[in-house]
Image (cartoon, rainbow, N blue to C red; front, side, top):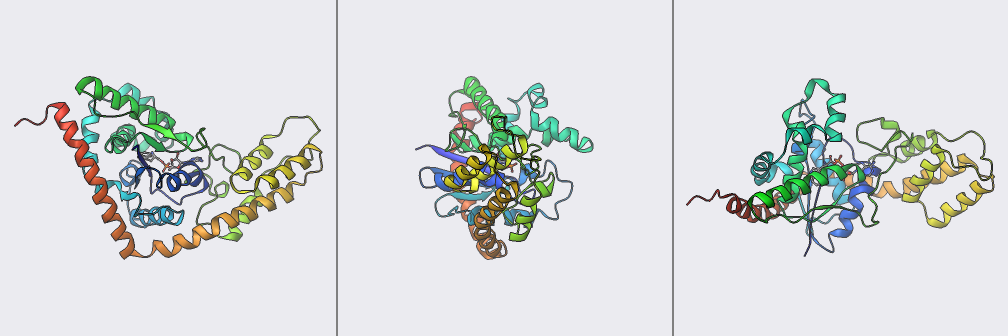
Length: 330
Ligand code: TYM
């Protein structure tokens, strides 16, 4: 059976991008594969200079995973830092990762530009740690959004390099989405992808209350006036249609598309529809997550169970790794 692995950093509130890029797939995959899903707290440390909010962010990510439908009895749900074998594999893979290729990583360049005062070695080797997470379970399917494509390519490279040098241990991991194409959920202002930290008003969080969701959607930019028939769709409107595809029923989208095509569309109505469907989608998740988030006993139990499952798989892989590398001296 194929093995699935993925993770989410506890660096802030989860949003629709995290859901449609990752979580939606997790929930379906847990019924078909052996799954390992984690809270990537070590990865979060690459950009944090203080850790006051780490505990509550970890609890939030766990709670939101479960509220979205993840069943800790089916998938292993754990915290990255609890699986110590990760650290060992990370260290060993570091010998296979070249400075040049790490420096070329898009996410590294972006973060180094945003935070020039904290370009630490952990940030540079972020993709090595991610490869360790994945290869540790010898996973082949990695449900992620489009922004993780390059990291997956690097994981494949490190795994293959290991296999060439030391013998076959790792199968190739690939980014996965049920819809084939990897997902990129745009932000409400159309400026790039939805993200945890950038422009909070252009991001819809799974924790946003109904009124806030409505406010954010109604503020989204539209084009002025209705389009000339036959002209290409403006970016703002096409962005809103992309978001509709995530939460609105196909026949509703078609109706709006028809009014767009015949020039009678009212953008206010379109945004109202989008807002209401987002509210309908998010409010049950928000309420469920809120209840779980504060249940420390339950979260502790889940984390321990998840870590035990993950470590068992990790230890089996590490035996193969040490063997292949000739580290079992006696
Ligand atoms: P992170 O925490 O940034 O994001 C978690 C997941 O959400 C997806 N995502 C999106 N998908 C579509 N549209 C968007 N706007 C959007 N924003 C975020 C991400 O692609 C990701 O799947 N490096 C990873 C965490 C990680 C990991 C791993 C993932 C650590 N180890 C091992 C897979 C396997 C990250 O920073 O994700």
